[in-house]
Length: 348
View 1: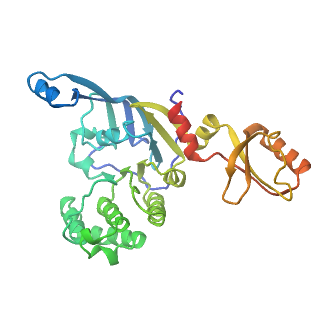
View 2 (view 1 turned 135 degrees about the vertical axis):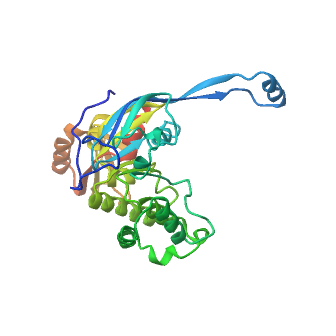
View 3 (view 1 turned 120 degrees about the horizontal axis):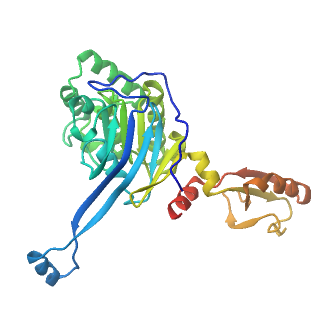
């Protein structure tokens, strides 16, 4: 699939004013960004280890290759791909942790890897598998440390903390040592610590990884409300498709370091999986043949209904036939699961 040009969706009404830099209506502009690593290459075993001590061989790993996209003000964009696709490498370049091999990027008018103070005060990177909080002291102490690092005034800190406390319910947990917090509680504190300086751009790398369903739901609700209130631009990577469905109208798919799709999530479903799932329960006729109406999927759904996969453009006609010809007691028409759509996109 080719890179698409789609209308950029703008959320919220907060206007962005970068500190020490200027930017257009697209806070994030990436052009032909690439990152190549040079790594040692040898076989396993003692003999190979001794040989490599005297003569090493190297190979190039193209983690990111010629990736280009723009993200508009206030957008929440899902950045998707299988493990090793280049998602985290891209976020690290955009947050200034890595230098690219080639290409360019502008975030809020800054070149990220120049690490200018104004840029560092305007963005944040949250990695679900990394801990930014001091392990043996209460999270509140880490909050105060960030207050000093970002030079946040007492008034601004108090106001921001009140807002974050309202959304995340920090009071009961911020006074406990971080090591005593549950994973969900720690993730709340991680988010709060990363947002105290009111960043205009958020890079979120697996923010709900390892959390239970309830904690995932609360984090999603918080991010959605934070975006609504502040108009912050968000790039989100996640292997939980519920995160993507709940927060993102647009997705960017990267695979083997190359951009494969950039467009609306709904358009991806129509293009990759142009079919519908018809779930039907037939009263007193469990043995009725359904294969005349489409591909009958194995098993049943959680409600005990049989499922028929049918082309999307034929679903209304097939549904009408079912209602006319079979003793239908219950029937629903559903889109294919987003997990299936994304997996098919990766495979293609």
